[in-house]
Image 1 (cartoon, rainbow, N blue to C red):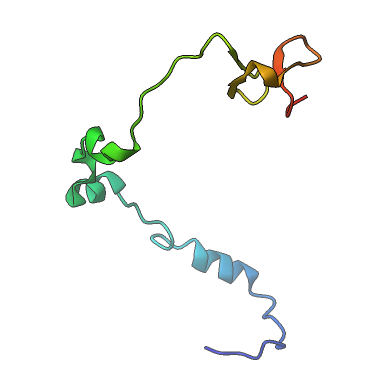
Image 2: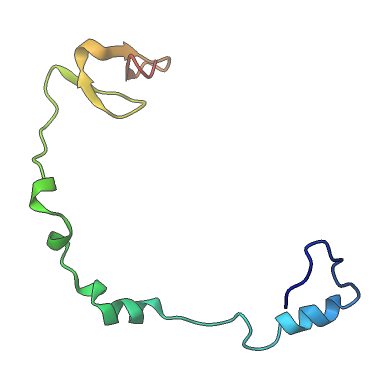
Length: 95
């Protein structure tokens, strides 16, 4: 039903509108998403299949001339070292 945008809103039937909204079954549906995902086969995916080989890289430990910034947690060269107000190592960008 189309009405004019400037038409006044109906009044006086607030309780009737609320009872219509609260009727059993209106707006209350239960969907078991696990069943849907299982039907599609999304739950049986091996984690090795999710990450392509070209996106994996080795983890290199922190070197002696590097530090971890206490603010941004990046590992940076010691030439970027500055101390934060709390005495923790921080990079020049974070200080």
